[in-house]
Amino acid sequence: MSESLSGEQVVDLDDAHVFHSWSAQANRNPIAIEKAAGSYFWDYDGKRYLDFSSQLVNLNLGHQHPTMVEAIKRQAEILCTVAPPIANAARSELARRISEVAPAALNKVFFTNGGAEANENAVRLARLHTGRQKVMAAYRSYHGATAGAIALTGDPRRWPNEPGVGSTVRYWGPYPYRSAFHSDSPEQETERALQHLRDLIAFEGPQTIAAIVLETVVGTNGILVPTDGYLAGVRELCNEHGIVMIADEVMSGFGRCGEWFAVDHWGVEPDLITFAKGINSGYVPLGGVVISDEIAATFATRPFPGGLTYSGHPLACATGIASMDIFVEENVLDGVRSLATDVFAPGLAELADKHPSVGEVRGLGAFWALELVKDKQTREPLVPYNASGADAAPMGAFAKACKDGGLFPFVHFNRTHVVPPCTITPAEAKEGLAILDEALSTAD
Ligand code: PLP
Image 1 (cartoon, rainbow, N blue to C red):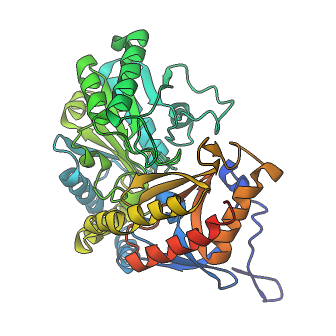
Image 2 (image 1 turned 135 degrees about the horizontal axis):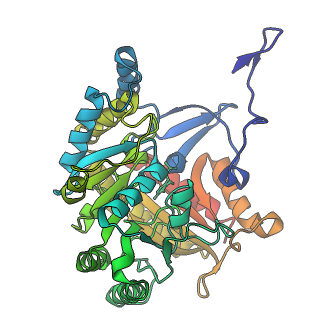
Image 3 (image 1 turned 120 degrees about the horizontal axis):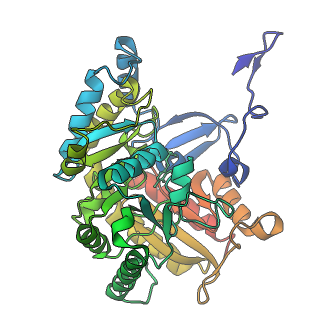
């Protein structure tokens, strides 16, 4: 809101001087948000929306949580900015708190401003630790939009002409995942995917590979929950060949999967975990890498060349601490597990039974996706990938129906994600599923 020369209040929403990335250009559901609270936000016409997107899956504690807002105010009054070589209490405490909930051998935290930087730094840690260069990353992954993180991102539909960096090897093999309709046995899928990885490691040369980077649960590319045994298999291969296992938990961490870190679900300990988003629900930009004792020891005698002006920013760390307090005080992890079993798993299965346009349901915790199809048998997507104009119309109509009904889902290609705040109440979650039910009729 600004004031015109005549003194009139002007709301400027045209973004005329904002340079957008592709996600805003491809936005099928343009909207401008004036204010928000809990699981809802309001546009400038006063229309209320239930937030089933968590604003790019980061708002795990919902909008305008009073404890978070208070933490920002309190920290702002004490200390707003400090250079990283100088200690500040918020940074020390948040690092200690994160290492307390991380897998046992991960006890040091390097702070960044977000997820892409966290992944960039994790790769650098792995390369310096091993003295090797190659990094393997998975097909259907997303690791961020900076140069190195995009090179890890394995999605030819999103970055068709990106050359990447020569030392990144994409793991183009099958990704084993569970779905309501998948007919293969999960054991077979796990073994097939691990064999592919074994073959690729052998082909590339195990002694040349610094790290394998994977999203513990794939987020942006469709909420793919790995089959049991897959992550443990990757861990074993990494152990066998001295490869650093990097789990990207930027989306899947801090409550989204009903655990502090999604790896806890399978009891697997990576060497490095990257985080962002859910650590403080994006109230102030924050991310980081949790580092194993073994890798941290490498840098006891040599410097880590990774300086960021805002690493460990006091405002960001204060919100991280407040967020971890809320997780405990409001029992958020248990709440997410109950939402999954009582509301999302049965509710989404019901939608899949009822609507011919729902081809697949995948997810866990508060992290779900519905794949929309033209035909359930052939699984032909509702719209082709990267469709535009008339080809994309059915997804546009679906997104509009959600919006008209007061629901804001995260719609991407031919999927709609159900990724509300982890603190959504069961009644609000059911309200969202009912709007989704209506909207899906436009796609059937
Ligand atoms: N890694 C994953 C798994 C993500 O989902 C994202 C963002 O969506 C990123 C990394 C990049 O995070 P950021 O946008 O904070 O750089």
